[in-house]
Image (cartoon, rainbow, N blue to C red; front, side):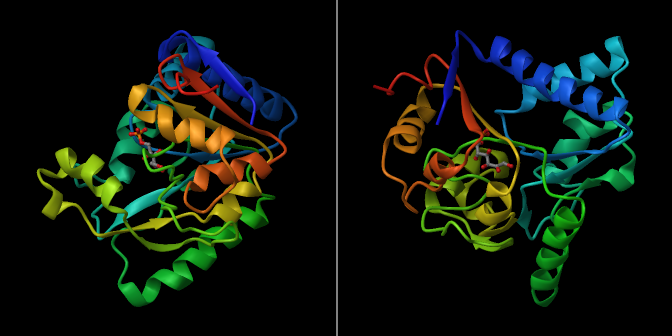
Length: 248
Ligand code: F6R
């Protein structure tokens, strides 16, 4: 996997935002929609801030951008403080001109028996649009992408996933204790992520260094789902120096 190492996450995030903005601009000029895959969490925050700046200061329009997020906890109300719907509105969607009908996230309010159909529809919508032009990912300390936890196969579909203990520990400050972290989440499958034309994974900080090194230099294994990206023809890792510190 090609890696691009920046001195800090600020400059890295600006460079990624510029790449996304250039793609949207090119598609806008050709009157084509841009199909983006998005993540939540701390890693993409500065990319979203920079995209908002480009929208405000350079007039970049998101009217023809269509997005699908990776995941949402289950159960989760969209206006809860920990909801990824709320996160995306606060960090990006409420500050740009994307129509509300153009962004999609898994629905954390669904009854259990409705989830399989929802997941099939989510994937079908993505496929009808021709798949992702660009997928922005983060990586978990356990090597997860989305909430595809260790053990997820390369052809895994969009589904309800039981969260790994490492994921719950990392999320526990947001929920005020490990016991309060939801046990499950709906996640886009590895299969859909791998069909994206381009995949960019962001990782900042020393706590990501080990999973980054395993994903980039280790064997392709379900123990580190991000290692599947080695099999993608157009995936890259954008790192700060600390996240890159365990690469050989
Ligand atoms: C979030 C997601 C997760 C995160 C990962 C890293 O939508 O899919 O895979 O990208 O857990 O989280 P941060 O960026 O908070 O370190």
